[in-house]
Structure formats: C-alpha cells, structure tokens
Image (cartoon, rainbow, N blue to C red; front, top):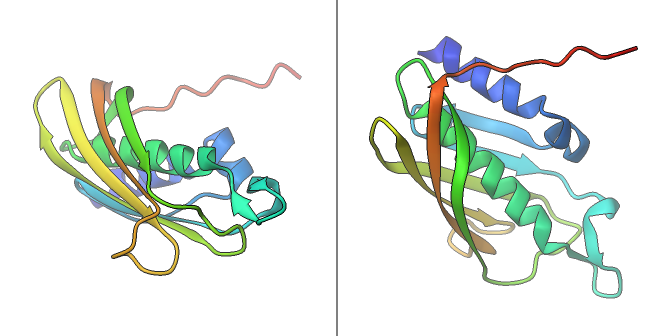
Length: 149
C-alpha cells in the first residue's frame, strides 16, 4: 500500500497547478494526509494588508481532500470532486506558510467523504474548513497527455 500512497502523493504534487503553487504533500496515509504551501507574493489578494487570496485555501483543500479520497481505497482510486463546501474562517497572512490536513470519514464503492482544515500558526486555530464528496472513477492512474512540440 505504501507504494501506491507514494505514487498518489508524487502524482498530485506534479499536477500543473500544484507545481505552479509549490504545494507539497507532507504526509499521505490511507485515508488521511497533510500539505504545506510556502508564502509567495503571487498569492496576495489584498496588497495593502498582505493577505492571501481566499482561492489559495480553496485550491489547497480541494487538492488535499481529493488526494485523501484517492488514498482511502486499497490500491488507490481516481476521484473527481462532486461537491466541496469551504468555510473561510479568518484571513490568511501572506507571509506565513499555509498548512492543510484532511481525513476520509466515510466511503462506499462510489463516493468518499472527506473533511479538511487549513491553518497557519496553530492547527487548533483553522483559517478554513472544508467538507467534500468525491466520486470514485476506478483504479488510480494518471493519463499524461504528450507535449505536442
């Protein structure tokens, strides 16, 4: 199982948007995981107050929850986001890392249910919380499109 978990984590980290953001999967176990995103001036949504744009938390938690949903099944599964509810609880300082954690709290053959949260200074003081449902599409695989050049 550890080989597939490493493969899922590596695949997610190498998705184009994750590479562009620099999103790191710091832990992926069966049904749980964690991420870290270093601060970047490009993520600032409020330049006067130096706050991260709220879309950063959305992207981090959707990506992490999807990876956790994939990891919840023996052998891994490819999943697609069916629904994601995200509550932004407070502002995010643009000069601090953003951490995320998620866990799959229920699954069946067709859908995985995941909750996640993001924080900066203290995991007990989340800046955002998410609950998502992810449709299972089959064995975990990445279809790589060939570069036309």
